[in-house]
Image (tube, rainbow over all chains, first blue to last red; front, top):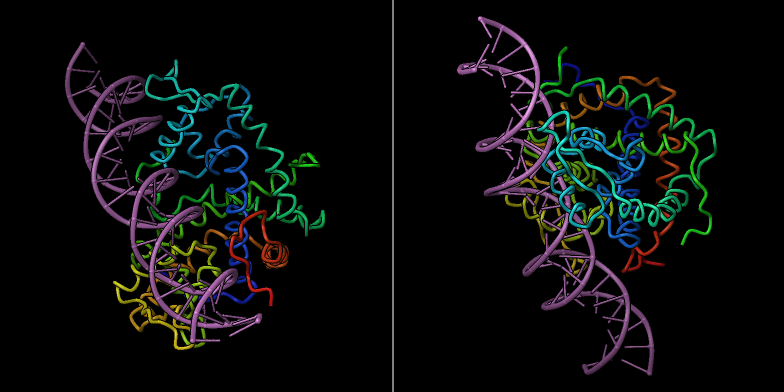
Length: 166
Length: 166
DNA sequence: CACAGATGCTTCGAATCCGAAGCAACAAAC
DNA sequence: GTTTGTTGCTTCGGATTCGAAGCATCTGTG
């Protein structure tokens, strides 16, 4: 399996553990804030935020799922929930009858606006408070590079349906 | 709620998004590897790993839960699962009749050993591959500081039961 | 010792999540 | 225009998750 069973030094291990722990704790706290402020799960918030940032306030299901690192079936579930609450609408795309276009509603934008300040406050307190400007830039740079690398490298067997080879 | 509705600049936002995305993608891939190699979920692996690193191979439930950022009830569930598979044992603590001591078994260590090389390989490929030594150190330093800060600051209302004030 | 409060864990119910299988619409080849 | 393969989404079943409530044990006070 692993032809190079090298082990990690304490710094590598520490970086890995800190990454996992920080994201877990952060996610936990944010989730609570979102739940209280607008009865949203983290995923739901991510979806709304993404839609809100879109030029025309809409996306295809698949693009949304990819953007949030989420399973398609899970997305269907959340989209249904959000639709029932009137925060988004779903309609078949004009171009492609199969694909569903999800669009944020005014009500969705309202919820987003209501929740956002608290969200920022949590991040500020929890994540940015102990950091210098240079630290934030370092995170941006290093994690950005890692993300690009991950996006590029198809994991071992993660894609039962291959991305276009084109 | 938020007395300072300041907004974030692109670098801060980018750092935040990258953090979330990297940890999500990483977790996804690792989860797959663990499932294939040893039929373990990520949480189960974390628990086993933590137990395996313990001097005497055991921990109390609460300490385990805190260590992995996990709910107590969720931990009970996973501990049951692991116990059924013979990877850990559970027994009431001698000191404190209420608390349960979880200990890793030899079989648990075997599974851990079987899964570990692949785990390291995934991390190596996905996380460390695009990074210089200095980058890893930066992550270790910055994220370590954030983690300490988070650990210290009790979130808005996250601790219905206070930690020992001692 | 009896009592109240704190602490450790489990049970319970409901929500969320994922992968596999299924269905419908597209695209390419003939 | 039909056949074959691909792609987009949903449905389905099962696993995992959490918080609230419950039970048992410990601790401090008188």
